[in-house]
Length: 374
Ligand code: ATP
Image (tube, rainbow, N blue to C red; front, side, top):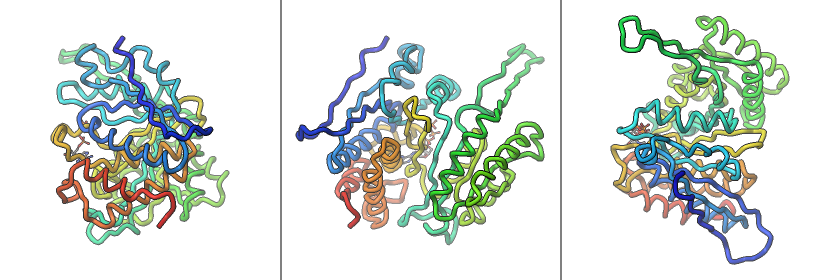
């Protein structure tokens, strides 16, 4: 067992009945250690303004922990995490540890064992950021990907035979269940219903994957019938990838399997201007286990330790976490503060073409945090 996690109580002095949320923090590797403290600072400031309290408990899990112990997580990590209302994750990845170890032994098991079957990724071009797509403005790029997060191509079933010999064989199986497709589709359609355009684009590949993706299409069509006010179109995943580049303004909610969503959201973050901006949530809509919120970027070993990582993705992920916990006003206030900082273009980290540090960007967001829209 590792040393017991440290709990940092962050509270106001007002001793009245306040909602208190217990947040497990896994800052993880590289710039995760830099952007998560920035997010905690902003969440805490928003909590004080909006009359609730967050209690953060830090866990040392990640690649350093693996190099010391041979494990990415404590063996009872899931039991420990079940005591929390939400999990705030930084980044996992280290050049000294193979990628399949970091993903397979930390992120994927947490997503699966905590039944976080929705991976939610807003992909927005914020005013003030230049997209690599020529001539595109914030009005053109405002999508959200609802990615299946618990089965599909990343279920981990398969194996290798005759390793290291000329007869070597690898099998990787995708598992698609009616239940799994139905619940992710229902989440996607319900989300689309709350958005102005009410559009769902389902990513398929039923021309080549004649079992799994034909069933995907059938189940999505059945769920679509429950949402007559939402328009559903299906596209092959390669066509949707091209459409994100050529006609991003036609896309709203993208519904995708685990692998397809993983790839499409990287396109989404690229056209949104920087990896340092995009957040994500690993959500269990049934709320029987804690959901987990993280920036989409990785540990960025090339800039780790320099204090120049863009904290916006982590701060935005923190705002999504507050929204999930029921603190919508605090979420909106943080989003407005982010939009103001990015929009007035005075404080920019190097990924956005500026010279500001992580700390300067965080201070700028904090300074613009106001309870009501100005
Ligand atoms: P990992 O293996 O952990 O995914 P990676 O370097 O392969 O690491 P990312 O960490 O996502 O992938 O980084 C890709 C590129 O984007 C790097 O050049 C990195 O510096 C840059 N980058 C990622 N996140 C940020 C950020 N928050 N601020 C600034 N640059 C970032």
